[in-house]
Image (tube, rainbow over all chains, first blue to last red; front, side):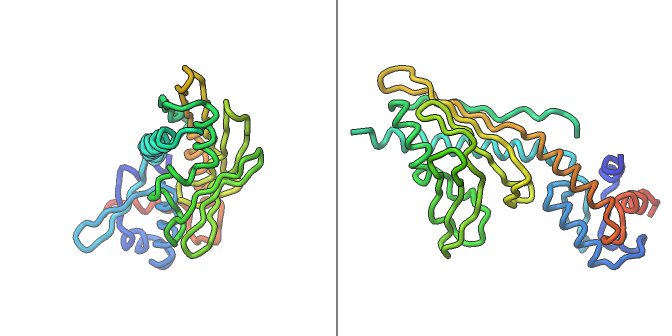
Length: 86
Length: 157
């Protein structure tokens, strides 16, 4: 799998751009789409930003929603019990 | 990527009748909807759930703009409600992307209602990611493919 291979080797934008026949902004734009979709993550190493595939994208989304519904339902319970029907 | 992602399941006991709990959950959604969960650029002013099957589920921002969250799939007061949650992993509303949120209200006593919530089809986040990947891979306009990415990434430094 392409993504699994990428996951093993985090790579900077500059390095990707230098090995491909496209501009660095084009690489950055491509990575932004992938990042917004939760498919890649990035972190800073010195002056470089290094990208890697995020294999936990879907699980991270699930974990977020799990926490979200805990908070939301606690607030719902408080609202439902605060004002009783007349 | 093919693994089935378990639904998020919650339950909470509310000291209120089922009718009241259902009403607060739907008509009263603005009273409990977490403010920080908001995809608009302007702060959230009001959360709205239209009380009928096919109704809109959206938020109104301080600047007057409206952000869709999803819609009402099943409206069966005071027992059951199914909502379409249509926010993608990129935090965008997408009419083609649907995950379901089901809430059931079960009477436990005169003023006690068990509210069970299930947010399911979460594997569609993975499917959506795979679809995007396929789209990017087939799109010549990007000037590169993920295969090229992988190849570049695998070359020794």
